Length: 515
Image 1 (spheres, rainbow, N blue to C red):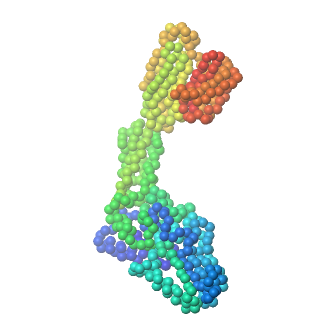
Image 2: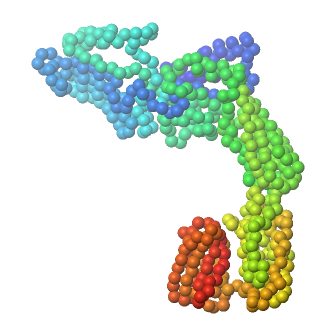
Image 3: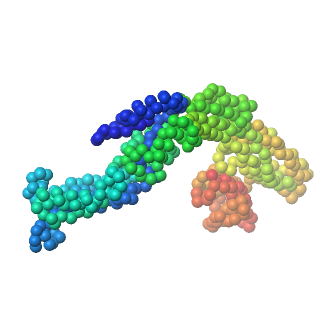
């Protein structure tokens, strides 16, 4: 506390003499801080707003002494003995912040100025803002009628008298606009480490996270007078000392933990700065599935079951308490549920079904008729399965009993099988013929861009249509008869589609997944 570059022209902060008195006072009343933090108080505005009291590249001070008689009537420099202008810096490039035209022997000699023009140039601060109107602490009012300020009329009259003594001319004029220009950019007041400095700083604690060694930066809602000890800043100090406010958090980013835990996992709290005086209280919403081992900012989570768990941590410090939560999947997913389903109950030409998508599942393995894994894939829409035919060469009059189950998959492995879906095909009527051989095939399935469509019996087709699940036509092609065709479907959104091809006067259909 109370560190400031109090020495004239000092660059780095140093403890202010008030700090010794401050610590003495604390010791006298027994109110030393119990949980110390590193904080900074800046006089620059916390929103990064510019100083509206002065604009870039404008005149802050002008002193003009004209020649006597007819030579002093024009506005050109030739009619002047002195024409000095001080300007604020520009927002880009460089500008002459001081222009000095001097043809007065006394001033040329005293100031060691050449006869004629002499300019000094400066660029903006960090190439993005006029230093004079940048966010930051402002200079005090120089002119005014209050205590400790200069009467402007008396100041101007004093300058005119001084000019008369030095030049012998009463033809002097002055303009000034030097109240409340920015004297120190706000980032100078806090030890920040930005690779690309920007005067328009966002002083929220989230934005400063990881960019400063300080636990917190206090900034006012407007640009203040440089090194001002006002009531707002003093209240900041008192709150820090007494720990009596909840408006002093250290920014906590998150609990760093993977989306799923298969065994044991180390997790931690991500925050800007590590303070040994903070306390961390961890908990698991279901210790039967996941238990917390250890204490502090980093702990170990041990798997004791499968399921969804919420991990919580409460961080307490000087006057604040912050709780963060994270829901995670422990172990393999929950078993999915098959619903809805559809099939050909007479001839067994096809079967299709969906299953629910348990939390954390990344793929599914479908089992038809006890061990026939007809689909074992990861990715979007793999909770849908389509099999055609379900029964090869069905016999007239026979009944076929079918059993379907599905398992969900994640990084930890497979879930328990779902409840078995049982259904019967038949008795098979005589008009089923040889049942449902696969007459149309697409590959790869699922696909991401292009796929090949072919008839398995070599029958040519001359028309192709693609429909979405709602029955809406999304693509249609016509071409000379072919047994095999490669098509590009990269323009279709990820979804489940039916593709139909026309063979003679009949349509053949198969489903595919676009990922």
